[in-house]
Length: 279
Image 1 (cartoon, rainbow, N blue to C red):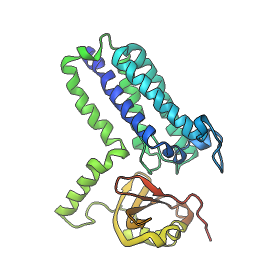
Image 2 (tube, rainbow, N blue to C red):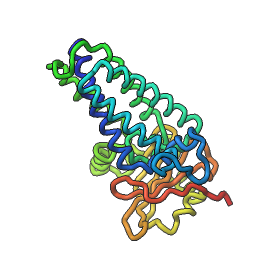
Image 3 (cartoon, rainbow, N blue to C red):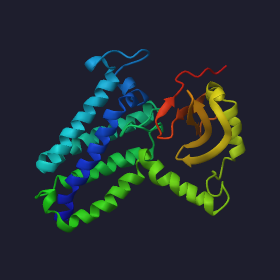
Image 4 (spheres, one colour):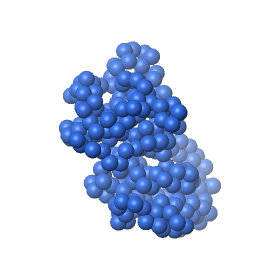
């Protein structure tokens, strides 16, 4: 247990550095999270640090804090581990707040992801809290962990599986492999909702009307994730190849509950209607 605890600061430092990099390279992701609501921003963004909105400023501030804690974990692991525990508690509380108060908001944990906060994001925060708590019990630095470092491979895989931002590197290739093995829709449909019913809901939604002129195909992929079904269409935005992804809630049948985002091949959001008329 001692070597396992000693190894944790290295993993946590790498995760925090990755998370900070995503925030600093995609600061506009802050406006898609629950930060504007939490900080009292509504309508036009109000200026904050360096002329940015308060949400973006806070987002960058969290990134800087993550970098500082990552450096502490690599050198002064005891102080860094306690700071990581406090940060993980904050992350978990913010994600729970997002899911309850602003259910359509994305996580913003590591930059580019348009998915609403779900159980995977909260589970990742709890896993980070658990590993930070274990790191706080370490009596030696990570460089003395020895064989304990091998366990980090399993833990890193668990973090990757809980990270929607990394789905395009392992989950999407896995889905394509399954498609090559059998029927294109085998194993992907919900047991309760036929695809044709989802398609009809999408076609009747304000979200579909908002991006209808950008679409270049019929449905070419769909999948279920927790309380949502995601349906994608090939699209073109500003002369670029793109994908329109509709988020269709299982529990809410009103047309206005459907959301849409147009993303590029790297998963970066190009267009996301914020006001959808119900008429």
